[in-house]
Length: 165
Image 1 (tube, rainbow, N blue to C red):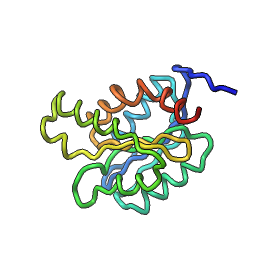
Image 2 (cartoon, one colour):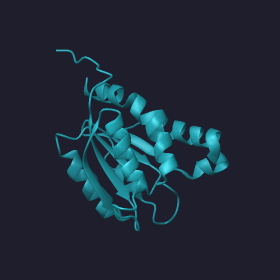
Image 3 (tube, rainbow, N blue to C red):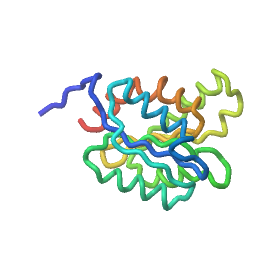
């Protein structure tokens, strides 16, 4: 039985904000991700904020990977090079396949659009785990907007189709 690609498929997402300081009221990036998902016909089904601690990040991701109703996990924050930025270390352990093009394109677009050479500080990444997509983006609202509008949302349904066919 072949699976058909539906570019308009509604996907279910979990949104994780990694921050030592943000609350639900101050989490502009997490709110923006959920808003963009809804505007594009997708459903944010889970949302959490965890501190920049590998165990907490890993626990949230591991739990969501077990949930059948989640197609994609979108993470914002903790992707830089500061000592507390350990999102990448926490999520890459789950990847069965990396999607290096996401980070490469994100840094290129950041460089070209307005960030300049500071774009090299981002370790934004994506991968596949348990037939789900995981994207890790920087914590700023501008970075989230760039990643979601230019890279993730245009390809989300196609990426999910490819990993599940």
